[in-house]
Structures are given as C-alpha cells and as structure tokens.
Length: 151
Length: 382
Ligand SMILES: [Zn+2]
Picture 1 (spheres, each protein chain N blue to C red):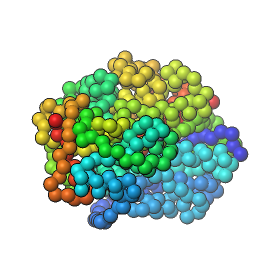
Picture 2: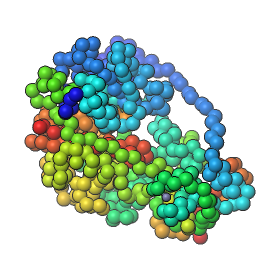
Picture 3: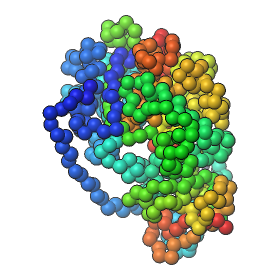
C-alpha cells in the first residue's frame, strides 16, 4: 500500500501555547484558601452516604445530594499505590526520577494523587504511612502541598 | 426501521511508526477508498451517514474532523465525530441505523501519534484544578493502576510480561501490525523501566494509521453481502474521573458495559459462549485486568487465565490474536481496529491469525486514563 513517492515529504511546524486560569469553584476556592492560609486539607462529607471525598465537590457521586459540609482530613494518610517515574517531560514540575503515589488521607474515602519524596526509592510500599510537606512559598495550586513523605 | 445492524466491510492501514508521506486526509482516504471498493458501494449513492473518530489535541485542531471532512463525504450529508475510542463510533453508528434515520453509515478513525508528544497530549486529559499541574500522563497513571492491581491480586511481573510475549508473537501473523517479534519474559523485563512496574516493551508504541468500516441496516446489508457480520450487543459505561476516586484494581465500568452488551446479545455464559476477544492492551497488565472485567475469568484471576494458555492463539478463548495494541495501533483508532479484527474473525478472514471457527467475537475499547470509560461490542454470524 505504501508506494514510493516521487517527492520529499514536507513538515509544517506548529506550536500552541495558551496560558489559562481556571476558577476553582465554591469547594475548590475554600479548599485552596484554607490550604494556603492555614495549611489544612479539606474534604467534603455526604452525611447521607457517610462518605468523605477529596477533592471536595458539590455533588455526591453516589446519591447525587448537594454537598456543603467541608471537613478537615489528614494530614496523615496511607499510600494506596505508587510508581517510580524514570522519564522527564516539560509538563513535569520536577525532574525524574521521582515517585507518584495515591494517598488516602485519614478521614477520607477517596485518594489524592501526588508526589512522594524524602524516601529511599527501594523502601516505598503500599500501606506506608505518609504526611504532607507544605511549600514554603505558596503558589495557589496543588503544589502548595509540595509532596508527601513517610512519617 | 431496522431490527438489526450489520458490519458489511472494513479496511485497515498497514500501521506504521511514522507515515511522513501522507497527511490525515490522505491516510483516511486510503482506507475509505478500499472499503468502498471491497463492498462495491458508492459514496454519493449508498452512504447516508458519516462518522469519524479522532482527537482534537492529538490532531492539534478543535473539531478535528475538519481535517478529513472531504474524504469522508462530510460536505454531502450529516457527519459526526466521536471524540472517544473507536468502539464508541460503532455503538453510535448502530444506534443511528436502529433508529431508522440511516441505512448505511461510513465510519473512519484516524490518528498520527508520530506528529506530537503523547505524554503532553494526554496530560491534558487530567482535570486542571487539582491534577494536571502534577504532570501525569497515561503511562504514569497506568503505572499506578498496574501496581495496585498486582498488589491486590498477586499478579506477577512475569504474567504481565507474558502478555507482551504472546501478543508480539501473534503480531507476526498479522499483516497490519508493525511491532512484532519473539520476546521472552526475560527480554520484556530487561527492557528499561519507564514507570515502575511498567517496562518499555509493555507499552503500546506510537503508531500512525486509520481504519474504515461500513455499517448497514438488515435490508441494506442483505443487498450488499451474503454473509454480513451482525452487531448482536453493545454498551458503554463511565467511571469516576479522579485517580483517587476508585480502587484502580477494579473495573466497575467495564463490568457494567460487558453485562449489558452480553444481555443484549443473549450471552449467558461469556466463558463458554465467546470464541475470541480483541481488547485494548495499551499496557500489558490491561489485558489481564480487562479479561476479568469482561468476565472471561473471576476477579484477580487474569494472570492465571493467561498462564493456563486459554488466551493463546489456539487456546479456548484467544485474546488479541491480532497482537492487540502492543503490536502498534494508534490511540482513538484502537477500538475500531478491535471491532475490525473481531469482524475478520467472525468472517473467517483473519488469515494466519484466524483462531478457528468463530460464532461470537467480542471487541472492547476504552478511553481516558486507567480505563475510565469502556465500550463493549458483541459480533456474530447469526
Ligand atoms: Zn451521598
């Protein structure tokens, strides 16, 4: 099917750059402001289902109730899964190798994906207890938690 | 109104790591021209609906079907793009025909992964408020799923690697495949770790290509061919978005989609009634996990199913006789390629990778990281 063609393939170079700002919404705004000003992590509770969600959201995924009861979760948590990433991309906020994990914070029923650091790569394990390290310089995004580290 | 929908023809690219000599439209035209020739149908006279599958960010253009409008006949009639996996366009096309609105629909999926960076493209699939800035892509997210799955059910690295050995050996028999060879478990596990526990050879490679298919109502199908392949069942289902929202070792959305598709097709015992499965092994472990979700074995038994030899080319329920995504199939095209391969198996036209006499074939596709969304199709002879 692929025939020899009597021309030199020509490539058109493109680059798309957009700087976007996303409003975090009612729950997100409260979460980020509390994280920035008080170094506390908020989740949202569904009293009907007796579940606490992170990230905080306005609707329960199980019963579709409107949620408004923000509760403090963590700061300690348990590692549910992890990976050691060996490659680097421009979209990575840090250079490889680094560890991503999903941390279920105490009091929450859903996990938070984030970096795991200050740990021997060979000693990271599921079930490991971790705590957040808060960034000294606040950026107003999820990296205000810099990473989680073993307790 | 049609009671049934049939697949009356397919055409597939020879998949390649790079196709620098064609653009999207030219690549799409290759398979459209071929499927029209194969079926003897005419673009103006016979086709009354066109559906394409591609992805805005992969193509670098919003409303990415703009790139192929003319070759698919989008300037002549209704044309819709399905922005998810190609299995969904089969479901969507079938619904259009069952509704009575259309008689004969042309489907075409295309993607050129070689033209950009998959990790940057897929980073955009993560929500912008909490997750995207962390730099996740489909591979690092899949690694979290693989680790969780292996931990929870004792699936071994060797079992995951064995999927690669099996599929790349099958791929040698598939003329469309571009990634193939004889790889031992040791070869796979000694390829570099990309994101633990996933090794380089366990990741479906970047690929360019397109697949076309024609769906027809029962009446029209019988005019076109003596032995159409019937779409006996279909369904799809979503799961929650955030990585931490679900236990990544589970597969609620696949299970739901499969059960509904099987019910529609009258399949009561999938292990006994399904003759062959083509599923989306974007990463090696996914073949094991999706086998469970499709009900080919119990929960956590995907590794044992593979070890038993049941999913081998000449096993009881061959899985990915084509070589699957590991053999090189583009994202977005993956599901339509699964459906096309399932079609070939039912027709008995899969050539060297034909698994024997196939009465029922199942095709599975997923989109989103860690298989957030699944679609299942059941194809058959009668
Ligand atoms: Zn609830």
